[in-house]
Length: 195
Image (cartoon, rainbow, N blue to C red; front, side, top):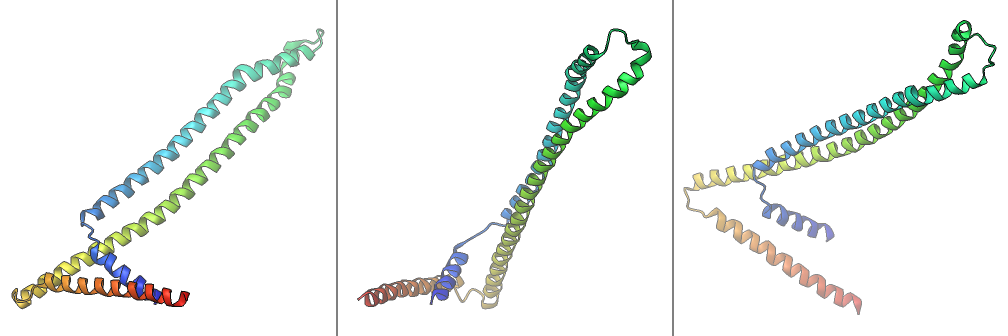
């Protein structure tokens, strides 16, 4: 019995719903705009993380490296010949600097990838949903167009001797009355079963 109500409700809903054919074009444009927004979001995330990488490079060059060099300089004895030992000193310092830089940039790359993965996942879900919606709208418009074509063909065949709209209204009224009668029966059934 429940399936009957669902079927009647679906039929009434579909028979009342009227989707203009321009909806197809509109939804395609909305989907296209969403595609553009996704690409813009990806570009913005990449730009943001590129800027952060640049800030890390500036930090390493302007703050970290001078501070590290100062610490090394303070550790070196005064008797050391800097010119002669400079290659060895640099060989000791450069790996430490590069490690720090790589470590910071690795964290950024990981964060960037996490955000991009989430963006792409959300977009994939959205894309699947909009494709389904677009297919439903296309189907509804095709049904409406087919219905209009069928009514026109019937009008041409009957040469306007049968008022199709009147027949449709009569059928809809009968369905409405049947639905009302069924609702009353359900109410009566509930009252009977409660006692």
